[in-house]
Image 1: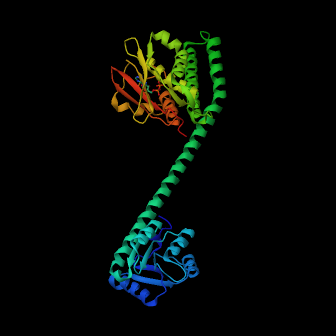
Image 2 (image 1 turned 90 degrees about the vertical axis):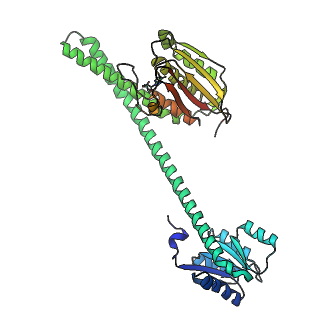
Image 3 (image 1 turned 45 degrees about the vertical axis):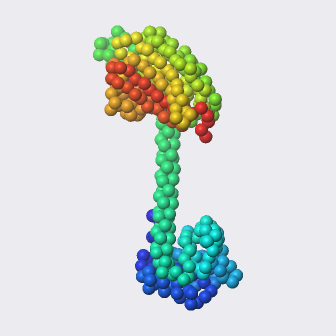
Length: 383
Ligand code: ADP
């Protein structure tokens, strides 16, 4: 907490600025606070707008107590001065009779309370409440500021990380291409011409280089999701799915997968990212299949807020509930490389794409029975 009234105020001392032209009224007010309320009061009395402005500019006050009717100005003018100086000091009207309507109007304009001069015993409680409200308000404003600062910091460190991932994966591609192509060349030219150990070492090197290429390619795809400049446009999700299926036709044919879909809506999306999203989910549905022929069904329904909820359902291996969150994290895989090839980035990319579109992605599954991946997209542009 910094710069708040709570920090600067001496808890034993109540610094009061009185706006009052009647000396004995001023004394009665202070008496009510000191004797009736037990406050240790330090007070200044002002009578004109100029004096008041000067005082609030040069001193710190915990509270302003203002008479409503002064010869040249009213207590409400004092409130305007506080506002124009951007000062969060509570103000209570301490006044002679004030009609109901006028009282309501003053409270509406920002006076914290009003106390009638013939009811000054009420004043201490009113002051305490005003101080407490101000303290809470300032604490709230302070924590909001802190939160906004943290969000900004997080966004910046995320952007830095993304930039790093992008540059690293982008710049690693070229040297890696060299390593991969020369190890492949070695394998081609010298297989069987050196000893058995050498053949095996070269095979390991080729395999390592290939895996690294897949990792770097996927990392680059990941770090490009938020770099895409493309605006969200009205996009047919059905066309996007069909494009994804064309890209996957080799895997579909090899596995004999049966892919079907219901009517799919128009959504606000970056079309190429939507293709990629379907492609990731359908290719996983094919890859993590069980003994049966893969059956994959894509459908969409309307959610409670008008969003489209898509489902990609398969009859594959399924996922145990304890992994429902984990599989969306970078490099997290439930299967060994020998069993199923992969980098563990596909679902991380899918999540990032969905979140860039303002949606959510999650999975429902039962091991041995298949999985359903759901994600939401908005029908209209969010931003
Ligand atoms: P990858 O497929 O490269 O391993 P993903 O991020 O796409 O990476 O998936 C992470 C893990 O989630 C996979 O390794 C797999 O264990 C599990 N998984 C993803 N999709 C499915 C699915 N449809 N059925 C069963 N398991 C899945």
